[in-house]
Length: 89
Image (cartoon, rainbow, N blue to C red; front, side, top):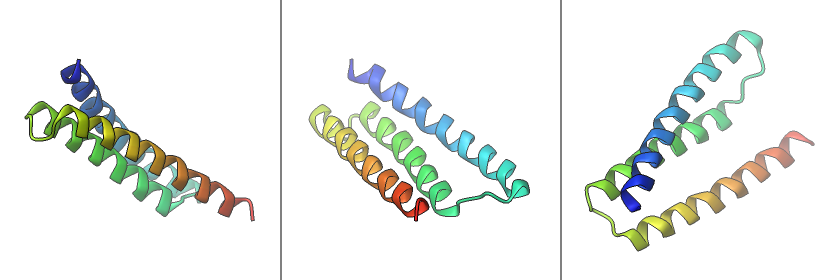
């Protein structure tokens, strides 16, 4: 179970990085380009991929892996909320 979750985290992280690079490249020509949001999403993508690799290599335990997933999920929600409220000002 944890191996499937780890592999999906690696795939999700790589896809998130690729999508953010493509979106950032496309939006530079439009002019609506948020560098902070781009950087945060890149960090999340790389962190998901690294956490998945660490779980597959058995460097971190299952309990710590689940705790990291919850922590990053809550952190991402708070950061997205903060960015959304600043854009509405």
